[in-house]
Length: 128
Image (cartoon, rainbow, N blue to C red; front, side, top):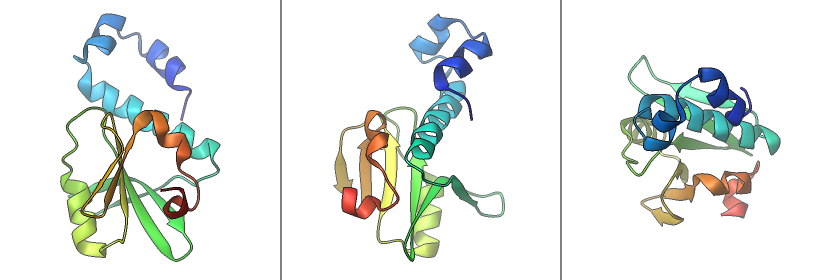
């Protein structure tokens, strides 16, 4: 985990590519790093889940006996097979998706804009 600005700078990727969206695959990792830094700043341990190479959840927040999956998306496209696999298998009462979309709640998934990841704490159900 590294400061997001330093990470981009150290990548030596031209700013035109970063800002244009052409470096989409790279920006996914940068976005996850940004979320990791924000969660760490709020004292949330960085936990993740993966199935046998079929799916992975970027972060898990443990809130008492509840485990809340957090999926991070770098853009508007928020469809996630991994989140669907996790939700089907574990049936969490709440899931969180961080993306460039606005706040929303649908089918047990809370959408939170990336700029608001700092709102998450160790009990996101109270925050939301």
